[in-house]
Image (cartoon, rainbow, N blue to C red):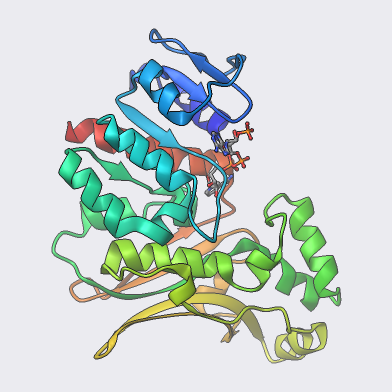
Length: 309
Ligand SMILES: NC(=O)c1ccc[n+]([C@@H]2O[C@H](COP(=O)([O-])OP(=O)(O)OC[C@H]3O[C@@H](n4cnc5c(N)ncnc54)[C@H](OP(=O)(O)O)[C@@H]3O)[C@@H](O)[C@H]2O)c1
C-alpha cells in the first residue's frame, strides 16, 4: 500500500506539491531531501525507525506498517517516535486507534502536531474527516457497520453450497483475508474497527478486547441457504450504542432481510451508518475498495493536515 500512496503523491504533484523525503521498511531504507520517486530502490535498512526519522527529517510521517491486532505495536511506538520529533502523523493501521487512541491524541495535542487515520476503518472512504469537517456540533450516539469483507465472501460461498474452509480460501485468493483468517471469521477485525470508531467518534476509551464479540465460525451452508430461501442473509455487524450505563459495543453475525441497507454492501464493499443527535442516521458506503482507495485515504489526511498548517 505504501507504493500505491507514493504513486498517488507522484501523480497529484502538479496540484499538491508534496515530496517524499524518505521510505523505511524492515528490509530497506531510502532518503533524499529533494524527493524520491515512487519506484525508488531501497538501500540497506537503517537500524531503527528513530534513526530513520533523525536522518530523513520529515514534516509528516505516514505510518503504514503491518497490523498487530492484539497490541497495536510496533506502530504505536513508531507514532510516538514521530511525535517526539515534532512530526504530524497519518496512519492506515487501525491497531494504534483501537488500542491507544486517547493517549496518542493527547500526546499529539501536547506536541502541537496533527494525528490522522482516515484509512483505518473504511479503506479511505470518508468517515473521520466527514465527521470532523462536515458535521460540526454533531454527537455520534452509535453506529452500525458491515465492515469485514472476508466474512461477506465466506457467507456468499456458504450460500452457494461451499464449506467455511472453501469460503476462506476464496477470500484468501482475492487477497482480502488475513493470513490467520480467524481474525476475520471470529470477529476480531470487526471488533478492532468498532473499537477504533468508538474511540474516535464517541470517546469510548476501549480496546478490541472490550467489544462483545461472536463471529461466523459456526455458520453452516444449510443455515445460510435456508435463510436465502426466505430472502434473508447473515451479516457480521459492528454496532455501538449509548446506554445509561455507558457505550456498548458488539460484533455479531445478524440475520437481516436481503433488502436491508446494511446487507446491500456485498462482496468487498463496506457500509457504515452513524446514528447522531442532530443529523439522524447518516452513512458512508465504499463499493469494492482496494489498495488505491486506502492510499487515497492517507492522501486525503495529508491534504487536510497541509490545509491546517
Ligand atoms: N492494503 C489495504 O488495502 C489496507 C486497507 C486498510 C488498511 N490497511 C492497513 O495499512 C497498513 C499497511 O497495509 P499493507 O497492505 O501495505 O501492509 P503490508 O503489505 O504488510 O506492508 C507493511 C509494510 O510495513 C513494513 N513494516 C512492517 N513492520 C515494520 C517495522 N517494524 N519497521 C519498519 N517497517 C515495517 C513492511 O516492511 P517489510 O516489507 O520490509 O517487511 C512493509 O513494507 C496495515 O496496517 C493495514 O492493516 C491496508
